Amino acid sequence: MSDSRIAQLKAFLEEDPGDNFILFALALEYIKKGDTGIAEDLFKSILARDPAYVGVYYHLGKLYESAGDFDRAKATYNTGIVVARNGGELHALSELEAALTECGDS
Image (cartoon, rainbow, N blue to C red; front, top):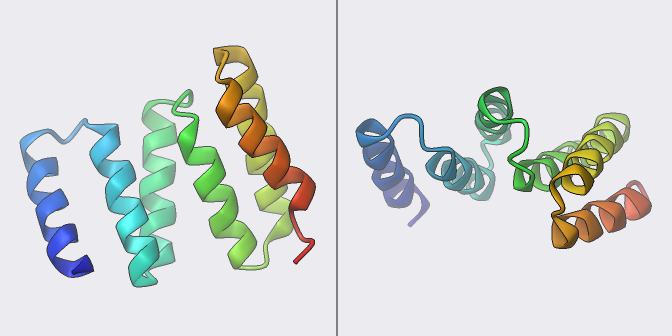
């Protein structure tokens, strides 16, 4: 299923290459597939275009955590916390603060 979903998302992206939501969905599909390097690149691409795309910080931080890179995960969460706070994104803020608190505990 993941490969067909990836193909579908890539087709959507060809129609609208600037759509960060499609890039985000594509990154999540690559995570499911185990292609974390591609997912990381996609997440970074989104943040380069739109640093206020707050949902990326949580997933990118989790990606770093799963790789055992807790320092990068914490830095990502901290940046996301600032972005969420500045944007009034209270739900994202709460999730990022919880992720930061739990980072490296498992």
